[in-house]
Image 1 (cartoon, protein in one colour):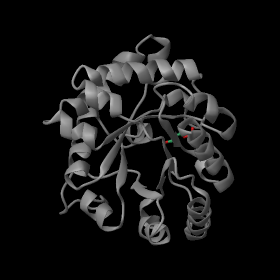
Image 2 (cartoon, helix red, strand yellow):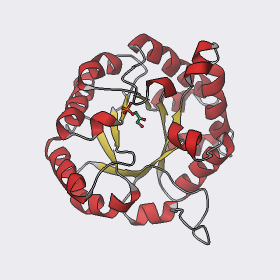
Image 3 (cartoon, protein in one colour):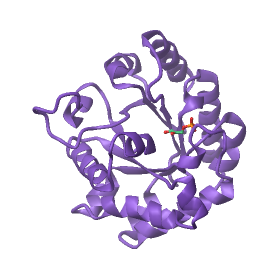
Image 4 (spheres, helix red, strand yellow):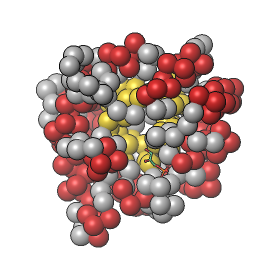
Length: 253
Ligand code: 13P
């Protein structure tokens, strides 16, 4: 049985006050059956880490440099994220791929670097609307996934990996993949990983992201290969985020 994971990606939103309020509310009510992860913007990581001390809620960054510490102005190294209390980092979010030049090769390098620094990498994959309409969803997701599966020692990579399927057309649009659409891609991802390592594929958590809300979370999380969610807009308010966590907890009961 895979333990559900619900991650809140705040994206470039928030303030110190919001970080304090949201973290306090989430730690007070996060259901123990679910692994809960908060991914605030980098300037708030240390603050949120302090507020999470002693709680089971985990801390993740939204991105991680592919470089070791050194002369890379503006970048944040995985070692620094660990030092600030992160256990996870998102890698390859579609907004990074779309606006900040994260190619498949760079995303794979980031996964390798993050894992070498002791972080669990939450690898985001997903097709654009054009790719879906052209029937190229599997090709797009496969390309993104294969770049990471091609890293040396696939077994070790999979041991510190979570995959988040986020169809680009469903992010922030209010348009959600139907449970059936999402399940089909999740099952395809798991089968693709199983070609390399069946046991680790069975244990791999695959999250769905893209307009997950309290009113659609339960039907998505009920799908056999959907192991939780990567939540954007609904993670900015404690009540909606906790309601999504509760929906995930219900599947673990
Ligand atoms: P929304 O939940 O706002 O669609 O964002 C999804 C996402 O990109 C999470 O990483």
